[in-house]
Length: 316
Image (cartoon, rainbow, N blue to C red; front, side):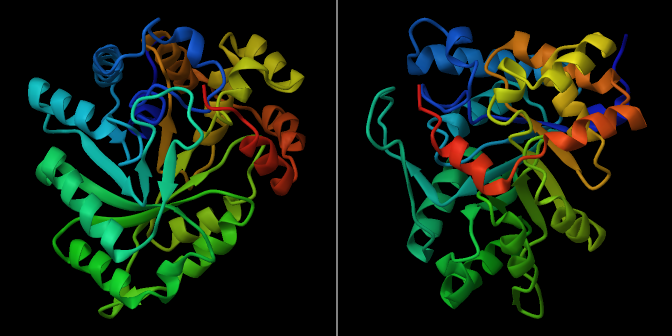
């Protein structure tokens, strides 16, 4: 069955699991190349990007902290010549693992004007004018950005050059962060026009805030739709049963649940292989019923508990 075009237009490919040798996604390690060299990961990224493009995906999301993700993406765009791909990236975290799988620290967060200037310059060097959306990586309600006017003005300068400015969120207080960011104005208009938040069957707490900003005109991107692989590898019985009923994998059910949210403009996939991507794409042919939605609703966990479990996931 050919997936319907509308869901495909709403899917994006995230490169968090492909741009560096180690990440926290469950079910990732066993599908990666035996030797996770930079060359091997570049080739894997190219294969997944090719398959995603062939499947109809036209949005790719990266970040400065995703190892060499921006470099891999830039190489692919140059080699393939695709002009119809929307590119988003993020700044704020610096990748410091130096391509090691086992290390105490993989990335360091800093929301400062100096970090923005240096990372925007790095992003521009690699991707040129291909960046359509530049996001603050993991903004929180207590971020120094909210009181740092110099940082806000620097972001506004990028905005005024024609690049949309957004932010991503993490943690149990995502909704509070979104609400506070909505109020930030520079030059008589909102600084941000997009948000990328975690939303999945286990952690839907940001849903109401995301629906409100979507109604207000922001673009909403949804990340971690598989709960870092947990909904695909060891799903609750409900997800397993629905997958059997619809003839797809549990990952497709979780993704269909995200696509079922009318406010979700872009639902990001995070596959580490072409096979995982193809399994994900089966979500496009799943039409959830009212009974399916009712069955999925009780899966929502307490947000603090969910994020505590996520923090315990190992990098591997």
